[in-house]
Image 1 (tube, rainbow, N blue to C red):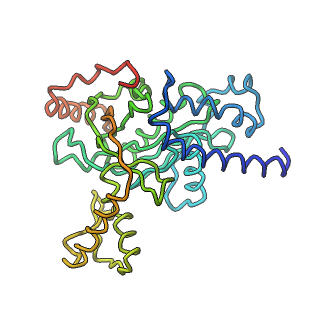
Image 2 (tube, helix red, strand yellow):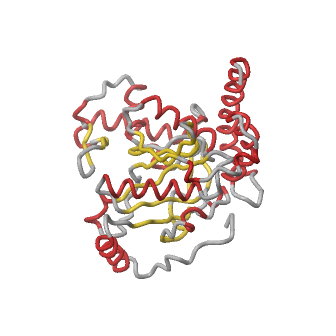
Image 3 (cartoon, rainbow, N blue to C red):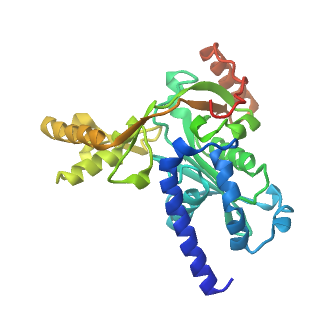
Length: 328
């Protein structure tokens, strides 16, 4: 590919990012295909992806997951983090990165990015093993693969990421959501033998900010996110103070807003702005999401102990009664 073709290709990619972001806003009401939205993106991206890599469909069909290199990307690796963001925007159905990102994982073929998993701090902890284990939970927030990748790439990359987390961190519970409005069932999680927790999770009301439509739809938690509260302060000319943060997590590595540290008058101003912002946003009723969980210890003994705790705390769940009908 020469420089002129490459530049034109980048313009096409940027245009597709922007179109997909706007489509996320509209397609909730208009999407009516039998397969999930994520698979539709895979089909739509295939021709362009093959062109970008300079390979034919027949050549791509010979590539196996054993040809891929798995890797962890630290937050300090800014160029790779930016590359992951762009990949998610192109290949993941939501078209945006999640909040509270903590870990990023990649699959590469001959050095080129072909798959991504992004993990984050949950908005709400599941307490599947009891309250004392809530800091052992990590959310699988985003995941996507290049359109021509082998069919088992997603499950391979997901499990490599989970195993890396167990080996290098204290996290042992990995949760994920599937959205029925995008015709998702959680097929990848079912293939990896995740526990199924039911379709009763997430906000039933979502919002769209008319001043920032590229953000897409978000739930009530979007008004309480740390970055959003800091943004309110900036808009109102309030100088944010370091002591207004509190650090949480097993190693105090995550920052959240410490409302008790903020003066009462300033609190009221920020919360009033939050209420006004909510009123300005367009809203819609949304379906409850499917939720899955995977539990893994560093060895068989720890895994057995953790799964026993899960069974004791979740006796009513039929964890392998997986959903099969899309869009319900």
